[in-house]
Image 1: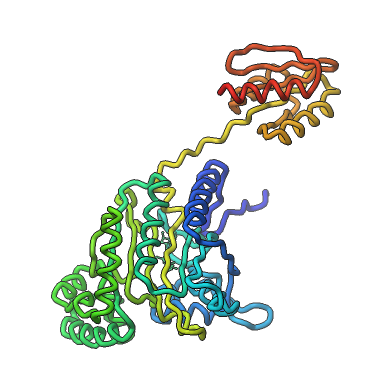
Image 2: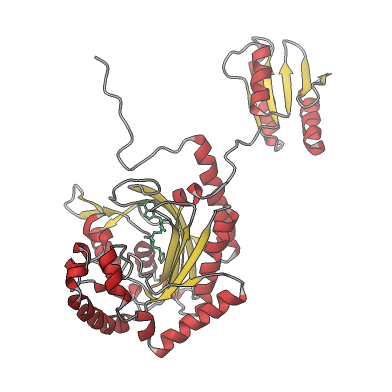
Length: 417
Ligand code: HAM
């Protein structure tokens, strides 16, 4: 009996070259965009103390309640594969005294994140995010800058059907007062609510806001709106963000139902989604978290940021998956040609020419076919004691005296193209 074939774990996937190229293109484009706006790269561990997320993301969120990959390490510590990046970035900001740097500290990151969710199209247990965070300023121009950067990232990726929703959650104090009011309203409509929302009336009544459950939605229609309860300075902050977005020609919908699934938000929240996607339509989102750093034990430090899902952006976009063609394929026309061919490939690469050579023992005819399949512009054919350069566009073939001449000729072909 053969051995059982193994598969990638449920909710995970392998990235094969076609997809890998698109991911790399998106990542490069994001890196260029964010670097150009003064954001600097940051990396944090893939796992953290469990307490970081419990305190940072919030005990009563879906993420912390049921989606974390937590385990005890050999030293008996509870650690968790990061479900998101903001708590980790704030932890690093505190740990490394980054409040002593010129503020705001503008950072970006990308990499794998983990949530134990029911897998479906666009929802995985390991997924990749690109994220950006700006810490140390509560200026509305940062909120607007970050929103516009995410819009630009999606635009450059050719993402289809993009919509932006925007709202403000005010401060924790406003939300506490509002929660009392909302709790009362929800209790009065308790029988209409979904089980989930009912179970959380005490702990997290705001979760009722974005529920898709018909009864809950109906109950929320008549509920007081947090947007109408904002303190004057928070309402002004939102106004300032909106004015900057409008100046920039950025379209958005003001959506009082937008609450997001993480507890650290204050003031601005936003989400981009795509009409081209199904149920999992959120491409990326974020907002302000002016109390999070302090809550994690740091000095009072406002912050704002977003994260975007790499897989979902690629699902909704038309980035080209085609492989870049090599400039040069080096073919072998003699069994002794390997060393000379290998040297030509190295010299070509040193000259900035993308080059590959034959590694599979094909006939010369087979090699030319392969070079054509790769889309190579030129082939250098290395014989026992001669060298030929073949222009793959025209089929023209010419003998040359030595390797340097061959490389110059190939470089010249590149200039014509
Ligand atoms: P989030 O909305 O939880 O925010 O996640 C951001 C994006 O990650 C989502 O819009 C989605 O595209 C992608 N995503 C989330 N879960 C999954 C999944 N299971 N499978 C595939 N993609 C997924 C945050 O993570 C916050 N840290 C954003 C932030 C940064 N807020 C302030 N700064």
